[in-house]
View (cartoon, rainbow, N blue to C red):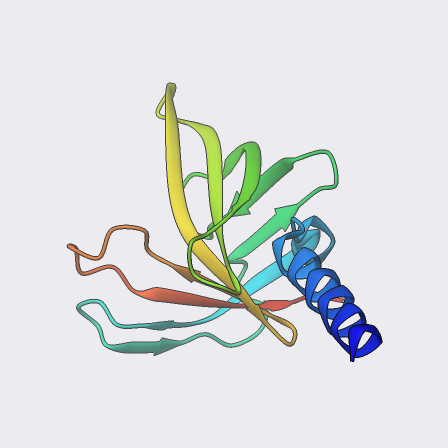
Length: 133
């Protein structure tokens, strides 16, 4: 019985540690926006090649590209969220020459990066990005 308890405790500790490890390997790379759900427009789906991309580097830098708007370049940090399987993505960049920050809740599903708006008070959609290879 003691051996069973020890084995169960060990497995529990190992799996809980892996859930709390920062998913930098998961986010590193380039992502392209595929759909927005919610917000005023409801559902918007995007075809591949629209140019709406996010790129995250191992060195904590990111670049956001928008076809009709100013690109953003800055740094990012990922910290654990209170919700299991979710993370908080903090980004820091310049917007119109002024420092700007955003704080979004994110999660990963298969090859998708899902960005949920941190503030639920506003009519902001949830963004679904597919990993580019």
